[in-house]
Length: 384
Image (tube, rainbow, N blue to C red; front, side, top):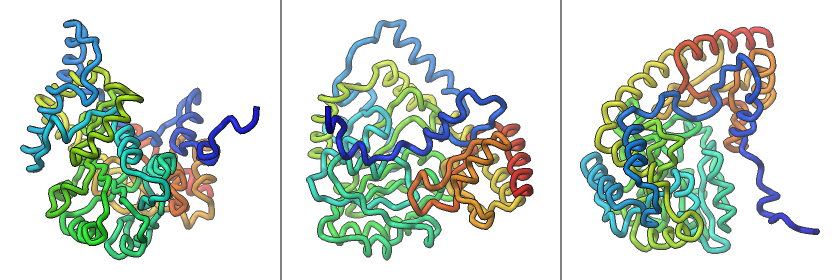
């Protein structure tokens, strides 16, 4: 049989993150700084709610949009936390993580020939998923602007076919975030050019040096922002797969159509656990945040001490150090570090071509692992 596989899928590259994760499987004594996942277990009160829901017999489908109890809880949570007001009936959708939310949003708004601006380095899925939806991804190199999209670089990338921008902050992989003033500068450009924005703010609880500002809270932005968030990072609930989208009702309605035919609904067990997270999870989130911040201070200082130049991330739990002066590509450095010293990191090129010369390292690992990783990396670079 000929031409079985879609040309779009054939052209896609496998995830660079998962490629290194798969290499680590089966290897002994490897310290993995590769996968972006909290090393904390989901707080007990949340786990208990999931267990109790099963004991009570909650094993059915839910509404396609998700449990009303969860949507109502989120509406109250967002209003209290940020002053954001969304109608739980028409402007909210519960998704299988933020990843599904991004996919649904792009498929809901894209027509053939539309362009989507993706600042890079960026999370691995944005460009490929945009292209699967029928858009052309327009990549904007942010390496000369401290890994941030600026009003100038955004304006330069816009033409008549650009429909939306994907913004992720705090960022995976760089850890940078945006102040309210920086977001206001970007919002003025989006309003001037009538652009939508997919704003992925799943790391909002892990912002260290200033308050997180949702883009949708800025003047004139709520009706053009598709607000994406979830429980995976802040609440340490990666495996539960609960995300949510807040957006204008016509966009949520379109996304729900696709969700109906592809996913149906998020697991009811996970949704019941998420309801409890909104009630009792705040203290645990702050405890985890304080620990990440301690690790950030230790790990970033350690990287700089051994010669890997790294700016202090403003959020999330990633370091993005430069290895340009070692004479190895990001891939070569990562492969040799794994082979010689059994430390797994992700080459920066997994996040876009401009990631060459950088590595992503997750400090969502315990202190002993981070200390030992620094020793091994130090030994490695001294031997190059």
